[in-house]
Length: 92
Image 1 (spheres, rainbow, N blue to C red):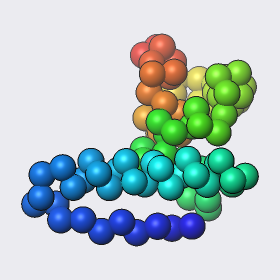
Image 2 (image 1 turned 180 degrees about the horizontal axis):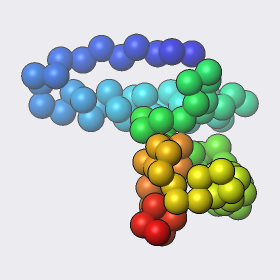
Image 3 (image 1 turned 30 degrees about the horizontal axis):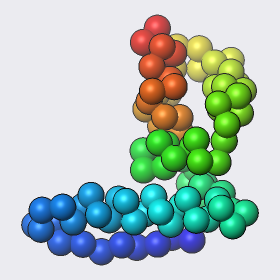
Image 4 (image 1 turned 90 degrees about the vertical axis):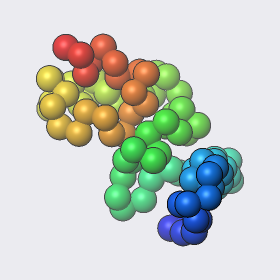
């Protein structure tokens, strides 16, 4: 799915409403057996929803793989994983 949610950027609150709507669509996709990602992977819009599909241990295993190939977290450090769970890795 590639939902396109149109909004008026000049109307206060419209962006936030659209972001919530997009998150609700992604949560529903996971709930009915789908996943967050498509051919483009996980970017900034989806990273904070990773916990909807993956448990903490699941994400930790994925981050360990990233640690092997990108030990300093230089490549797209703010994408894929929620910022709160990667803070120490990105700092150091």
